[in-house]
Length: 185
Image 1 (cartoon, one colour):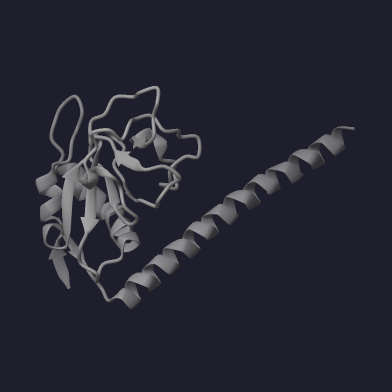
Image 2 (cartoon, rainbow, N blue to C red):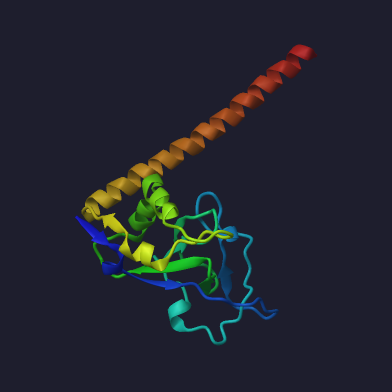
């Protein structure tokens, strides 16, 4: 089954906030996300919660979509130590359809074909930006929850395989380097 995003989720823009000295909340920006699309551990509270509407406080399973600039991605939010708010670089997508897992939605948005389509719709010359309407009208394939979980399991195993292959390459290089050093001696 396919469904437009606007029928399964609400989409809002992130919040503009200025850093303060007595901060109690995290202000998530694209630079705070690593290659694995998780929040870097070095981030510290930088904004005050005074005046922040409840709707802007991120909840478990919210999808942050980086819509501005060259680094577009979707990341599923996991609750952190401090209350968190998304910057204006993000759209916050809050699923209300229980037949779609947030992690599956994140995976779907990050697929090369989907991301290429979205980037092709971006507007702006200095800083390209994907519009809320483009995201809202995007059609997402929604398989059964069981199939969504299987897709996520396969993706997890693929990521694990990739990390193990990288570790193997590093170890191989170390062994070869050590053999060369031993041969020189």
